[in-house]
Structure formats: C-alpha cells, structure tokens
Image 1 (tube, helix red, strand yellow):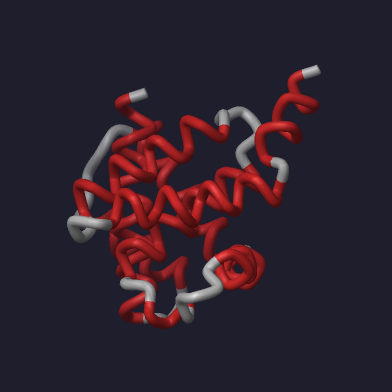
Image 2: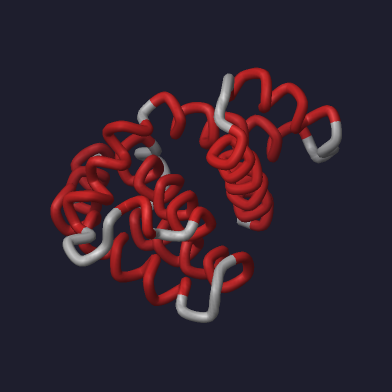
Length: 144
C-alpha cells in the first residue's frame, strides 16, 4: 500500500510538471526519472498512471466537466485537477484497485499537496464521478 501511495505522489508530480510545461510527456517522463530515483516497482506504477492519464486526458477531463457544474475546469487549481485526473484514470482503467481505495488515496494526497479544502473538494468531485461511472459495480463484475 505504501508503495502505491508513493507511486501516486510521483505520478502527481510528473502530471503537474506536464500541466505547467506542456510538451511531450514521454520526454518529460525521461527527464523526470533522471532526477527522481526510486524503487523500480514504484517507478513503473507512477509512469503507467501519469503516461496513460495523459493518453486519456480528453476523456478524463470530460468526466470532470460533466460533474463540476459550478466550476470551469480551467479554474480548478492544478494540484487538485491532477489528483482528480489520476483518480478518474484509476476508476476507468485500474480494475484491480477498489474505487473506495482510489478515493481515499486521492483525498489524502490532496490534504498533503493541496490547499486546506482540497481533500473535501477532491472527494466531492470523485464521489460524483464514481456514481455515474458505476465504478464500484463495474469492478465487482470484473472480479467474477
């Protein structure tokens, strides 16, 4: 569990850097790991999350737009937005990770890296996305 938390944090750093700088995520990924040493399993998990989140960014941002009726996606601060993006990626593409775990991890990371209200903001957005994607039900069916 601790390794995945670290992987999520590193994925957040990489995704944040991409959000600020733009450009080729694969180039940023290479440069990021040149200065960010960590265990191989953590690195693989973080890379998978960050690179594949960018691959599916339009779909993921579409979910954010759909549930954030009173917030323009461009007004959401980059830390919260990228935490939410990574969590939605997990909802959609990580069948082995329970939705409740994804939300709890996102809230905790939001508290660590975001503003004072980040944890509750992230929770509110992800709870709405989870309910309309039927995340929990889909993952239960995948286990059968």
